[in-house]
Image 1 (tube, rainbow, N blue to C red):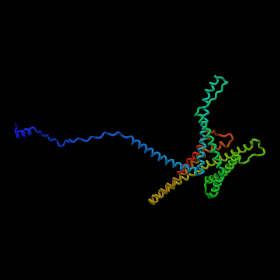
Image 2 (image 1 turned 90 degrees about the vertical axis):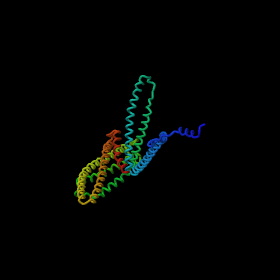
Image 3 (image 1 turned 90 degrees about the horizontal axis):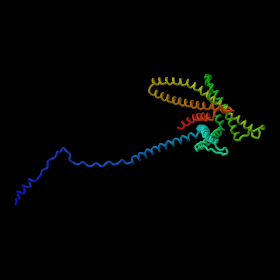
Image 4 (image 1 turned 45 degrees about the horizontal axis):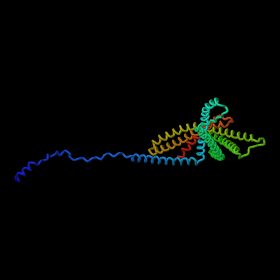
Amino acid sequence: MPSTASLSATTTTTTTTTIPSDPTIDTSIPPERPPPRPQSSSTSLQRLVLLLRQYMTTLAHTTDANILRFSNLLSTPSGTDALLCTVGYTLDLLSTLISQYLSQNLISAATPTLRSSRTTNPIDHHVVLPPPHMQTLSRMRTCSKALASTISDYRIFVRLWGLFGIYTWARSTYLTPSLPSAASRGERALRAITWTQVVAGVAFQVLENGAYLASKGAIWTSSDGDDAAGSSSKTREAAWWIWSSRFWAAHVGLELVRLYLQSRSTSRSGAGAGAALTRAAVSSEKDGIEAAADGEKEYKILREEQKREDWLWWRDAVSNAAYAPMTLHWSVEEGLLSELGVGILGTVAGGALLVDKWRETR
């Protein structure tokens, strides 16, 4: 039987030792990284909602501003007339273009049908209906023409009291200080043109009022020589329309002459103003910084005024240049322009005024 000492020795010899590790090596187990989560579609949806909200907010502000500007435009008689003039002639142009399109396409569509009908029994009658889109265009043409006629009638009606505006214009011209003895020939010509335009405006308004009221049966224009159909009354009414257009043409022609004379005088005055501003700038440099600042402010004010005058000149030039052929067209019984030409020129004439009135609503 072994002794206790030998057991202990045996136990000692079977003991294992651990080799020490390198302290510079990290033997710790790294934590496991969570698997990447798939990107949720909620982020894209939130971004889309945000963009949509921003767009709706911007659209609401823009719509609100345009409605207020449109209300300001319709709050003045000149703004209302410019808008109705543009819309009315645009509708005339639209109806004319639709008529031309329908006439061309209906002829081309009916030609094969007519050819095939020759080979069939002539007793059979075939009704050829236009395609649905042509029927829609035909209704659009009728509605456009009717609305344009209504707008034209309204514009003539609200001009019935235009004599009051002409009186105000004549009064302000009369109260304007007389021209000095040293006035140029251009200034005297401008004053004479203004008075001639006043006379032409009065004649135009009186004749147009009479023709319009006679067409509505509001005034009696018949005489003993009229027949049952009232041909003499119709002839007299047509003559009033023609002569009112002739006085309108005279007014437009004088306006173009006035714009020409004004452009010549403005070019000379503009050169003088430029030289004056140059001298003011030189003197302001000598006087000091404060004088230079005042001169710069004055220059900006004069520059804005010059821009406004130039814009008004071009507005009147474009509008009257477009109106001139139209007034000549209505000054003769046969007319000079086609319906397409009247629509284009009327849209240009009204559009020039409408753009200016829309700018004033800012």
